[in-house]
Image (cartoon, rainbow, N blue to C red; front, side, top):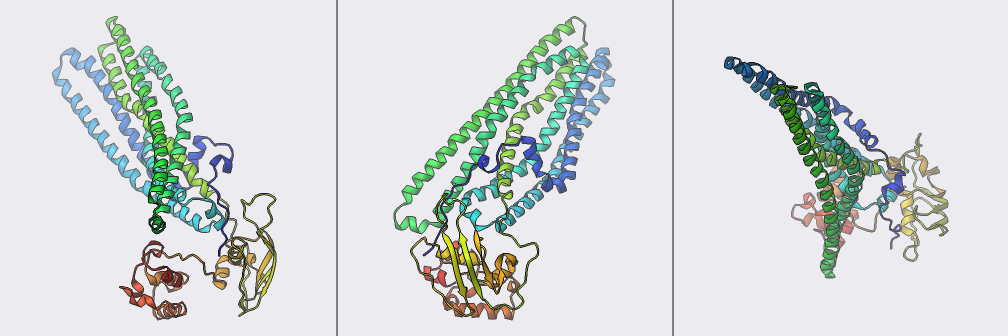
Length: 512
């Protein structure tokens, strides 16, 4: 019989961390992980910006060409200008290729570092944390969210900054060509910035909901796969499928809401530039007809406006990518910010003469999410287990037998009293030494998708490289567990057991 903590859903982010921080503050949390990649990222930004600025130089060359050689009918002078424009175009293409080369590898390295840090954090966090969180939510953060962050860091961030700078420089060129047309262009772009602010308010919340629902869906799939034998045995496949379909439909609805929000900003990003272009064209033609600007100025103005069209239109999907990344970073650090409440003491004590004398002194324990006013699950337990002594705990289901044994290895910490091993409070021992002195056999058989050898020797990392000692320990463990059946498996101890050991019988899993 076992005792499990009360089920507790993954709490909402607002419940865990209070007021929602700003987008920039959230994005800046990546800096410790991104710092090694920043030189390459900045280099990628620089070459991308150079490429964009080169594209803005071409209209200025056209301006001189139209007002100069073409206006004078000097066809011979056109050739150098055309060659210069061709050279600038080739150089711009080279800059784009360099940008991709600079940012690709650093982005993947940052993603790998963040994923490794996340996994290490999961290993350090107490069992109480894993009791609260769904496995699918953790998997989606480790895989999907980090993929979003990597793509934004290597692509979205670079292009967003470069395109904003390109727009600002381009507007400067437009104002320099003719201040009236340039200011008109700038004023007409104001609705885009207003809508961009409104877009953040709407899109951020729906993006968060979408990623959370994806985590819930991943949890459902994982549970169905792990429980496939039970589902088939009891004919509950259709029930689980219906529940899964309902979750999938909710996610689909959220994704449609996201798509509508993106479509809304795309409408503005396509409509406003077109209207601005049309109004500027009308004004430019009138100014040119009145002799207030030259034909070359008019050509340069609209060529520059055409160059700015892509940076302006790209703002929509770059904003959505940025807000997706912000949400992913939020979700990532929700786990990374969890306190490691069960840790090594500042100065670990070592047991000089290990004997195996275990003492509970008024031990008390209650789960974190226990109802207020409810008595402690373990309430003032006193036990004195001498070396070599065997004790059986008997009680009704849910009375705390398994929890009591879990306290000895600090899977949970007592909330009152103490537990001593050979006269030392186990909280004063390093976790590695404590778990080397006390072993716990769980009721549920947990095996990893690896060989029989790896599963049996899991607790002896010093024997991972094999050798006579590893063979001796392996055989001794198999003999004690009466697991000689492993030698009859297709590859003996080198046989790979399936995930959760499902390729073995229930009894075989228990013995291993």
